[in-house]
Length: 159
Image (cartoon, rainbow, N blue to C red; front, side, top):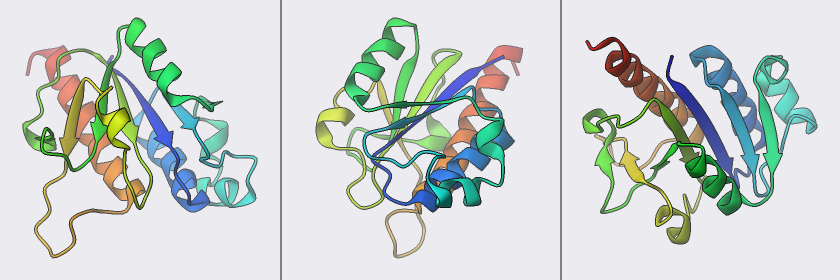
C-alpha cells in the first residue's frame, strides 16, 4: 500500500486546512502534518470545515518544516513540492520513484518558498488552461493527492 503524507506549510486559511483534512480522509493519506503558522483542528473554523475528518486523520503539528523534511527523508520518503517552478514536472507526467511520498504544500499567496523548493526531491505542477496560473491550495492538493495515490497504486500492482 502506498504511503503518502501531506505537509501543509504556512497555510493561512483555516477553511483550507479543514478541507485538507477532508481530502486526506477521503483519499487515504497516511498523515497530515500541520507546519509553520498553519492553523490546526483546535481552531474552530478548521474543525467546522473538516466535518469530523480531523478525528479520523492522523495529524501532527510541527513548527519547523525543514527538520520535518529531513526526518521524512531519513525515513525513506521522497519530498514532492506542489509548485509552479521552472524545475517542476507536470503532475500527469510525474513518475513515481518510491511508495513513500510526502507532498509539500505552500502558502496560498506565495507558494512554497524557494529555499524549501530546493530541499524537495521533486517538484510538480498542475497545468492550467484558463487565465489564472494557479488553483486554491485545497483544490490543488485534492488533485495532486488523487493523482499521486493512483500512480502509486499502479506502480505497486504493476499496471
